[in-house]
Image (cartoon, rainbow, N blue to C red; front, side, top):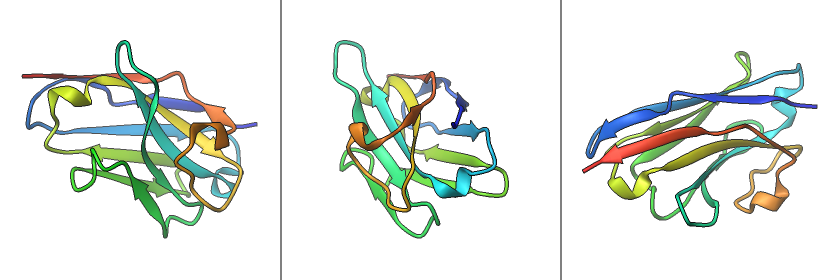
Length: 124
């Protein structure tokens, strides 16, 4: 069992930055690949970024590539999403997810555990 708690969301102007964090409980964090997803109002939840269990492989949605960076600290059992050059279309609830596998995935049904989400609002 893994419990995930996101933090770091908020209101930011377009062009600004935010750093999301996801703190995981349990001693087996290093057994999980991790991902970030987001859901904008009236839209389906979509993939944002993912990182392998070891941290040596990362994947990004085309819409955030070059602007967002996912990283993990297995000692601190935390995964981060650094978001730069934010745009109003990045406004969404951002969810952290854990997958019991060494490989990251871009499909949400591959993930076993989810956090409650953190709101990110980007004003124009």
